[in-house]
Amino acid sequence: MELFYSTGIRLSEMVNLNIGDFQPDKKLVRVFGKGKKERLLPYGKIAETSVRHYLKKRKFSLKPVFYDKPLFVNSKETRISERTIQRRMNKYIQLVADGKRLGPHLLRHTFATHLMENGADIRAVKDLLGHSSLSSTQIYTHVPTEKLKKDYKQAHPHG
Image (tube, rainbow, N blue to C red; front, side, top):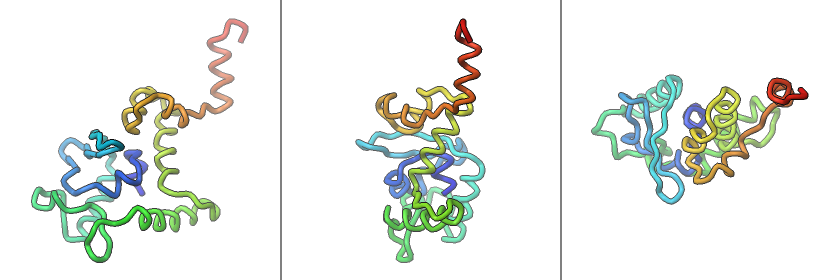
C-alpha cells in the first residue's frame, strides 16, 4: 500500500512491476503506463523499506540477478492479479475507513491531493500520474474553502 501512496501509480502499473524496475541508487522506479509509456517515479524511504522487507520474505533482493522477476506474486510465485491486490487492499482499508469500499485508486488520489495541497506544480503532478492532459489531473485538485478564502483576500482588490 505504501508504494501506491509514495508513487501514485495505477493498479495495472503496480501489477506489472518487476524487481528490476527499481533503481535504489537513484530512488526511482520505472513504470510502464497507459500506451506502454515509460516514466520514472521517485519513491520515499518508507516505500523502499516496505519493498525490501517484502523481497526479503520472498528470499529476493533488489540485486540484478532478480531483475526479471515479478515484484508482487501469489503463492505459486506467479505475477499477482489486479483483483487480488484490490481484495487485499479493501480488507486493510476497511479497517480504517469505517467499512467503506475503497481501493487502490484512493491512494493514487490521495498522492495527488497531498502533492497539490503542499504546493506541487500541477504540471509535475500530471507527469507523476502519467496523464497526457492537464484536464485529467485537475480532477485531483480540491482546494479547501479556507484556502480559497485566504487566496481571495490576498489576491482580489476588494478582498
